[in-house]
Image 1 (cartoon, rainbow, N blue to C red):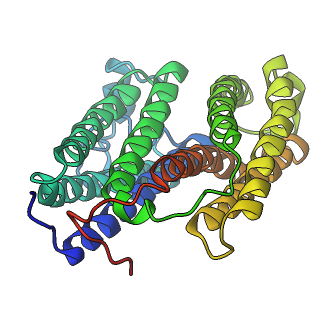
Image 2: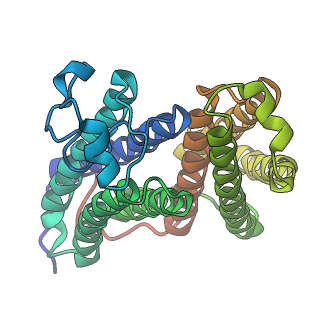
Length: 335
């Protein structure tokens, strides 16, 4: 029989893993800010920024011929902008923080080697994926911000979050197995899977809208935002209308959770969080549509979309492990 794991070690792993998940969401938010502000080329090289590990704060700190230097590297019209440079540089610093946190998460997962090796290998896989994500980030810069590369970068972040959520949730399955979902209709799980598929479709359409907006923004030199809407492609209107299907499908799930689980249950609180995220995403989308694509709304809309899928995935994992209490090889004392 496997040696029981100390409860405190499990709690530390859960807290570290949860912190890492939120840090990944912070990176997604930072990336959205970079993209919405047009700061993606604020640092035209990688891993340094204008050839320096700590970027300059004034154009006078750069070589007089830096325009020619970067033009020879394929970056035409490179113009130093301290705000955009430090926005992109901050995004990179947050990415480095993720690397440290994911390494610590993988290291701390060693406690499960004797009870559930899958948790360790999942955490280790997340670590390598974050490393690949860092390399992909450098490729995005090298590609001069090709939309398809930016989209791949974002989708991989979504996958990393899902993998981390699965890893952390699996490590807590003894506790989650005690949840009573006997009063929930069986079709809730099926509808939740449909809701997740709908979210992925919505995200896919959203990436196409973002690529179109990037092109429109470039055409307008990132100004005159109030006129951008006139050039929105048809996929934008499909994306906008599809949000109502997302909303009502998920509200049905939340309603069934309200009827079928305890009022203080983590499942119901997660359902409420899901509803709040969807409503916030829709409000951000309405703001983009009606208020001239304000930069602040773009990263919020992107972050909400990613968090919606993450919460749905966590809820699906919880429903999968619920009503299956384990015979305590590890023990768990939530705090």
